[in-house]
Image 1 (cartoon, rainbow, N blue to C red):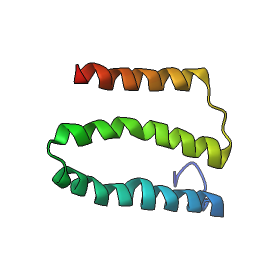
Image 2 (image 1 turned 90 degrees about the horizontal axis):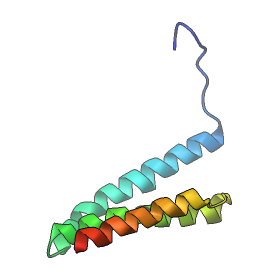
Image 3 (image 1 turned 180 degrees about the vertical axis):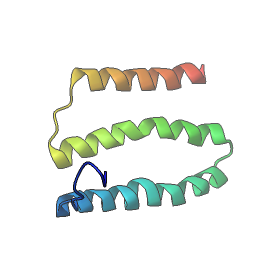
Image 4 (image 1 turned 60 degrees about the horizontal axis):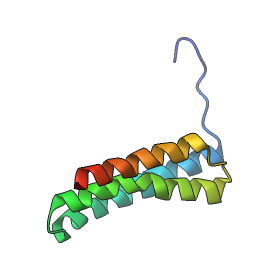
Length: 89
C-alpha cells in the first residue's frame, strides 16, 4: 500500500462501525461465550446457539440499516435451521 496508494483515514461513520463491531460483536460475545459454556450442562446446547446469530444479525440489519431481506438470505437461514434440526436427530 505504501508503494502504490496513498493512505486515507476512514470516515467517522467507518470508525463508528468498526467500534461497534469491535465492542459488541467481538468483545461482549467473547466475554459471554465462556460464561454460557460454564452454565450449560453440555457444550453442544450452547454451540448450537451460534447458528442462531444470523437471525439476530438479519433483524438488526433490516431494522437499523433498512436493508432488504432477499429470498436467498431466507433460503440460507432455512439451511442453517435444517442443519441444527438434522444434528439433533
